[in-house]
Image 1 (tube, helix red, strand yellow):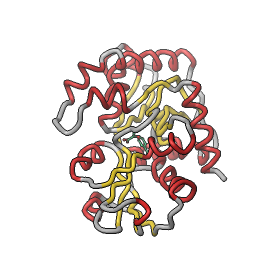
Image 2 (tube, protein in one colour):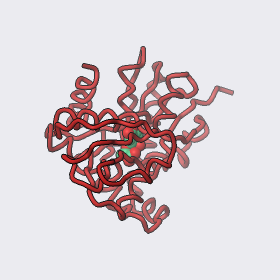
Image 3 (cartoon, rainbow, N blue to C red):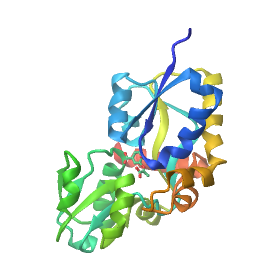
Image 4 (spheres, protein in one colour):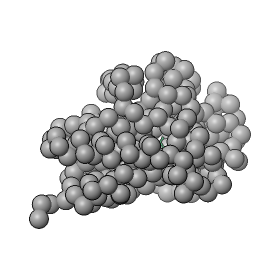
Length: 247
Ligand SMILES: C=C(O[C@@H]1C=C(C(=O)O)C=C[C@H]1O)C(=O)O
């Protein structure tokens, strides 16, 4: 039997539409799905523990070889809702920022916004585990991504949505994660993979209902906040982001 292709996918709600077809269509017998948080997926791709992953785009410049597979991603054309700087004070008064250990792209995006858009000069602290979320107080703010960010929204005073801020600063959409492999994969596989990604996007209502947890309106999350097509505008946003972080 042929070896299965190891596919790493983000373990958050954001990727439920992309995993839907991968778990249901015939491609499911050709792959092994591994779910992890984004920073771990990045490590796994870098170490060769997965063949393709929905990895933070910020690691692309660090890979000796990389191939973007297919036409889907985790992106946004405005506010994304699940990636934000959460604070008790306006951003101009923020002095310390905890960085989410689960993120790679949003950490880089935040640091770009801090320097070039908000023009503030905070101290950064790299969080090691979930406890950092309790540190948001006074002039201490934190970056949170994923399901934990959706959850934190209801108790937050100030929410600086990183995709919305990027859009305001550059006029472009933002791509957080894309399907990346470190070696070329067969064309026929990529095509089947791409079709499996698109399948879930036809079942958004069902997926939103199945995962509804009363925390956030998932139909809105999947159809308005997130934008999964890696189209020409998103590729432009991605290129600009990768250029800015590799300088
Ligand atoms: C929109 C999101 O995009 C994510 C953010 C990532 C990052 O910051 O490295 C990576 C993958 C995505 O899960 C989110 O997690 O909410």
